[in-house]
Length: 525
Image (cartoon, rainbow, N blue to C red; front, side, top):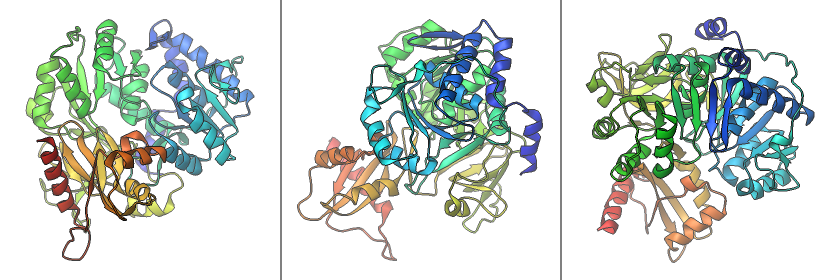
């Protein structure tokens, strides 16, 4: 156990759900969470958590078992998350947009005993999974009228019980990694390290009892969940507003009505919102801090965010595996515009190295390695990948190319690995290539990231067809039918007769990227 993590055990001796009890006692009548269906005070939230935990226990769920949670942003997600944590059951967080291929692989890896869905939109997927995976004993649905095969989640109720407190050095929840290999990897976050993650982030971001945090990004992500997100806001007695839509005409009136002070966005969403301000005129004067992360923010776009929303911009760079970097609220404007900030903890260790993993000279660009009190030392059930992802000294190889300025701020220059960052979602090129190769009409394929003004990067698939090239839309439909999540389906598909090759005979993906840009430009003209 790393010595810096041991310090967190002393700093955060209570597991996360037990902390909720303290928050409920301290902020009892204050509003904790709000969604389209209503609001709950801190006291009511804690009571609902107890009620659901007792109900889940009646199904036979036991500490240490896994449950896949695939719910949209809403109060139900928060209640369920805390109920599972209170029982010592480990949530495996999935996004509502994930489809059969993703969920199948997650179940194979995590072996959950239950799968929680929202409603009819995931019912058929849930039926497929229960038929395929014997480990799934229960499917629970947030909506009551979905299927007789499923148990309505909130029909499960019981009297408050006293649960054995989970070990704070043990796993609290499993987050999904973006990855580069195409196979899912789960990130085990422990009670103590995750408590530091959200508590220290909340302090740095100025969260207090008057803060109103809007969760508009999918809450299965680390960013809106704990940076400081939902958990950080609740730890300070603030109010969390959960929006199941990022649509400007729905969210901006919500910001005005709830007097939202803090929000987290990805660059693509920030750009859409700025465009919407040309016609959407809700009063957004309550906004104090807009966090932008998930992908590199262009300095020009950063300037526009500040000018459009007239509040503090905070750049956030981090990963669900641990390390978080923030620009500070009082940083000089140039730092906020041009850097991705400094590490959250003084105990975060950062190395920037060359291809041989020797430290580069100050100010030079290299691969980012990190270890620290809240950074994992290994993925769940992934020994082969862990051997590649971590050094012998347990530094995590992030795969990011960065440089550090004299003030200690990181500047993200790109990725080393073949990973596409589409609107903040990290997608492995290898995963899409693997699915494409299952199609009978595809002889060979290669997937690259192409720069995109809205998405940051779009997915471009190059295909060598067996015979006559297929129709672009037909290929997209086939990928959808195969269960590929919608945001992983290529935005651009191009057909080739042969590959451009490097000097050593490998597919030249740099030339493919240039070709993708050129063909996209010609199509747009």
